[in-house]
Length: 351
Length: 170
Image 1 (spheres, rainbow over the protein chains, first blue to last red):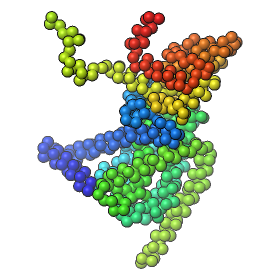
Image 2 (image 1 turned 30 degrees about the vertical axis):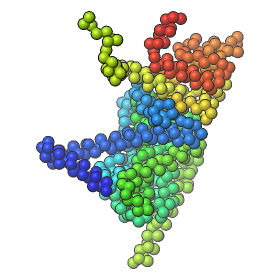
Image 3 (image 1 turned 90 degrees about the vertical axis):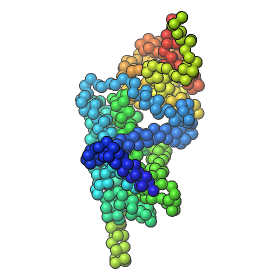
Image 4 (image 1 turned 120 degrees about the vertical axis):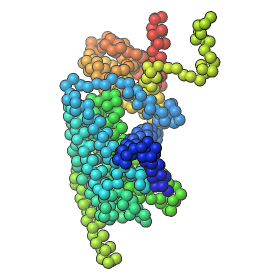
């Protein structure tokens, strides 16, 4: 349904560029890609408005408060006002900072977020580049985010920033391994790294059923990967002020936040695609478009992330490391082994 | 008679067009999202925490985000007694904050030294070394008083002209 809708728009755009404006084939392709990239960026930013509002409302709900309720309906306009205020703040660059690195660090993280979105489909055929190594690309780009966090922590010339940056690097590298291992089980069952193939394989059964343990491991690992509570040790207020973005003020600080929420949406989308059936409709409810189903699943995942964040207290860094290396990695490895044996036995029976 | 006075502007235009300056818009937004600095000096800080918590919920007014880093917040709530040992730290925190920044003196101690006014190691009020915008009296002030103080500061931030006029008349 939505394939025809989005593809019709794309085809109409390409036709108009080539016939109406006399673009060459390549130029039309490039322009269409640029417009689609813009759409993806807008999607991230619009999500952000809803996400920050939801985060505030959920935190208020879990703490029996009201949350922002003065500006707009149910405080919905609070975040736009905050953004305007942040735009008007002074841009402080510490005197002894590594100024170039300091300036580009937050933008670097935002770039990796947008790059990761290149392979994430938002519906059947609604994708910027349907690579045959889509999942691999996503994981590879996701792991480069570590570099920008380290850049921010290192260049601020502040001991809290540096410790926060080091912690983030340690945490993200440790939890990337179980995250990738947990996704491997799904990849083994599908036999492809292309995300549209993964969704197509879930027509009859979502992978959360045969890969329930992998889903749980993925969930825990991505909570740590996106630096959200209870694993937000990188910005633990009581010991590190604000972690790697302690010295950032004004719009540079806002870009850090935007990138973090963009990452949150990205990992939620990957979770919905890999485990929750992507844009496949459950119970044959196909009259609701797949795009809407995917959004519902993404927001369900985001709700889980927020639920965990506002329910559990922050844990200690050594507990975090022990949990990652001594529990999650063995469990995810065992999951791969069991999945492999399961596939082997299945093939023996089917023949 | 050719000059059109401001009160002669067409009724329709006056009712349908809102004219403002970028400054006014920025000030309005600033006044609606005052993020306080997470820092307390004495018992007033307990009341400040109560203000942010379930029963009084400062988040309703947009001051939800208590930022731990002075670079990212707008409002410094001096909550408690400023001792001579602590005074340089408070001053430094204020200097680390990004412009525009505002100071709210909460409680008798932060206003004038309070019950410790004749002590050898207490600074006589935050306004001896910081430009305090709003004073919230009390020992300690109740959370409602702090919310009222922040709402008064909101008025001050949103209408800088009005405050200038008030200052002129003492």
